[in-house]
Structure formats: C-alpha cells, structure tokens
Image (cartoon, rainbow, N blue to C red):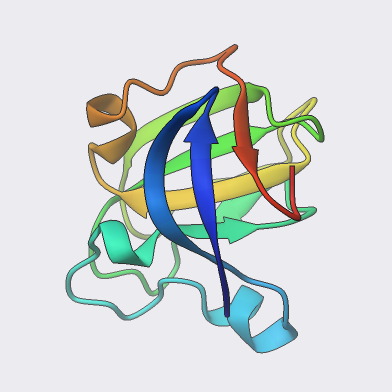
Length: 117
C-alpha cells in the first residue's frame, strides 16, 4: 500500500495514510485487525460503498466527492454492517472509531490526499 498525507485545508490530519490500490488491498482492507490505530487510516479510491464484514472492531467511515468534499460521515460503524452506495461519493476513508470526531471532520469539509483527491 502506498502512503500519503490527509489534509483539511492546510491542516495535516494524518501524516501517513495508506491507499488501497490493488485488488487484495481493497478486498482485505482492515479486516481481522484486533486494534485499529491512526497508522491504519485507509483510503479506497473510486469507492462509494463499504462493508465491515469480518471486522473485529468498530470504525469511522468518511465518504468524499471526487474533489475531496466530505459527503457523509459514519461514526462508530459496527462489524457486520453494509453501507450501500452513497450519492455524490467518489472515495471512501476508513479510520479508527471516533477519530473523525477528534479530527473535527464534518460534512462539507474539504479534504485532500495527494494522488487521490
């Protein structure tokens, strides 16, 4: 997986996010991890739906438009859930539970990740 920086405006939110580009990276995502930390933030390019099947812990899921505008924020998404395709969403970000709130990420915020949005 390739690394990049996640920003909100000029503010760096996460210094090293992973970008799931290959089939295996996209398929496995965060499945099976006992603990998810800030080092595990994962971006799924060109993805507007997500599942938490086989997850061992809850996560936060953020959907952004092609331009990086936050379209949806799902906090504390439990394992074994399915989020159907989200309107206006082009990419998906998975992160540890409650991190979206700690980073003050809200619908309408403009995020950037070099090479993705």
